[in-house]
Every structure is written in structure tokens, then in C-alpha cells.
Length: 96
Figure 1 (spheres, rainbow, N blue to C red):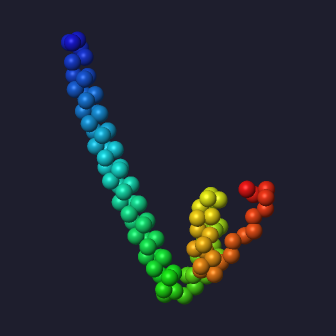
Figure 2 (figure 1 turned 180 degrees about the vertical axis):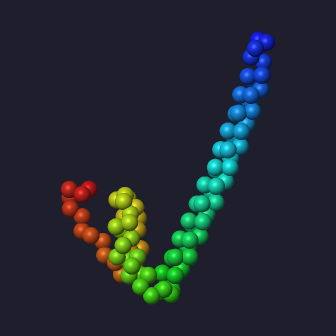
Figure 3 (figure 1 turned 60 degrees about the vertical axis):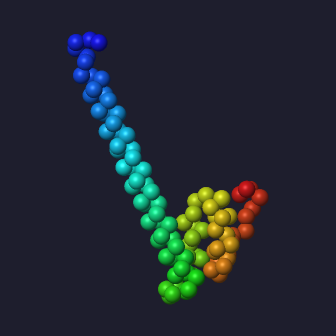
């Protein structure tokens, strides 16, 4: 071991431990945010199913597909939009 670099290993180890702690906290925050989104989604689905908010069904049916950017997401939500009274746009063969 070098006389000049003896503390470098301890400092690097402390940095590594702090980075692990930061990553764990980020994971906790990500899980919390995901749970919040799931709960909010469940709340909104309940409101849509009960038609408890005037205009929410129509607004969702008219705008959800425009909000979604991936075609796979649009396909996933197709039955839901139709159940709200919305329509799926007809796809051209070029859109596939």
C-alpha cells in the first residue's frame, strides 16, 4: 500500500456506499410515483365507469387516443375507448 494513496480507497468506498444509498432512494421514489399513478388511474376508471363526472366519458373517448403516441398503446386501449363511446380511426395499410 502506498503512503500517499492510503485514504483514497476509504474515500472511494464511502463514495460507492453513498451511490448505492442514492440508487435505493431513487428506486423507492420511482415505486412511490408508480403507485400514485396506478391509484389515480383506478380512481379515474371508477369515475368513468360510474359516469360520475359530467363530460369525463366523452372527453376521455375523444382525447385518449390523441394522448397516446405508441400504436401498441392505442391498440391496447381500443376496447376501452369504444366502451366509452369513442371510435377507433380506420388504419391504412401504410400505417402498419
